[in-house]
Each structure stands twice: as structure tokens, then as C-alpha cells.
Image (cartoon, rainbow, N blue to C red; front, side, top):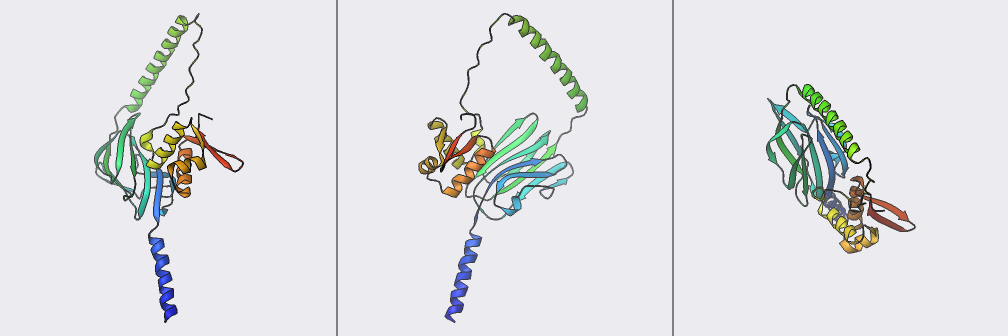
Length: 243
């Protein structure tokens, strides 16, 4: 009987450990005009693996709905949603901090969260402007004319001038709003130490667990913000344009 109780206790501990697993995610979510959603990035949640699917979108009349709701506790996550050109948001329900941006008529949302559920619920419409092809063609031709005219103008003005030497910049360009708090800790430390440090130095300064530090370094490397280079037993971390 004692052995039976002991076995049940061990199974209970294993079960509790399994259910208490914390997830993380660093995702890019691209939504097409047909409702197909493409997932890419880094995550340990099985429902957010890289793939293209239409299971996250639905349409009623002219209104689309994007709904991503996965179970589990997330220690941290960051995502970027890219909607098709002409998208207008009608209603948005997100559990965490987010920022909306527009680039080349394409709507984007960047969100981050720590110790909060991961779900996205967005209603939106897509406005398709008529004669887009004609307008695009006219703008293209006009752009060529402007560029060519500008080239000739500056060529005549600067014909006898010695080209000025461009000042090199050593500061990396990246959007801090698209980084998690832990990734910001790493970036801030590198900025204060001339853009490079060893992984051990970063871990000691930030006090991040080894697994979390390694995961966030992989995320920064995937965003092309940093590079890693092994020298013997030491892993050197530096901004990609600061080697």
C-alpha cells in the first residue's frame, strides 16, 4: 500500500511539472488578403509552430476576424502582425502592450507581454482601391522622371566638387519597441560597453538564467541586431555593424 501511495505521489509531481511549463514566443505573423496566416519565428508552444494556415481567420460580409488564442502560461512573448495593404482595424482586443504602425500602406501591430495570456482578436476590413494598377503605373513613371531630373541637376551642380566623405556611424539601427524587456537589457548593456561583450559578462550583469539569455540572444540574432562569434571557450556578442 505504501508503494502505491509513493507511485501516485511521483506521478502527481510529474503531472504538476508538465502542466506548469511556461511558454515563450518571438513571432512574425503575416496575414494575406485571402485570410491565410503565415507564422514564423521562435517558440516552444506547439500551436504556434511555423506554418501557413487559414484556421485563425474568418469572414462575415466584408469584415474579417483574426483570432489566435492558445492555452498555457507564457513567461514572455513578442509578436509582429503584418496586415495586407488597405487594411483598416475595426475592433482590437489584445492582453498586452502593443503599437500600431503603417508602412507603405501596410498596417502593422507589434505587441509584447510577460506573465499574461497569449491571444489576438482583431476585426478588420480590406479596402481595395479601383484603378490601383493605373495609379501605380502613373506614379512609377512620374518617379522615374523625378529621379532622372534630380540626377541631372545634381550632376551639373557637383561636377567640379570633391565628394564629401560620409561619416561612418557605429550605432546600430533597430526598433526598441519590437524587443522584449530581456532583449532590451542585453541591448542596453552592449550600448554601454562599446557594442560588444562576452556572453558570460552579459549574464553576470543582467542576472538572466542561461536558457533565457541564450534564447533572447538567438532572437536578437534572428532580427539581425547582434552577431555571435566563438573564440575558444568564450562566446563574443557584438552589434552586427560594430564588429
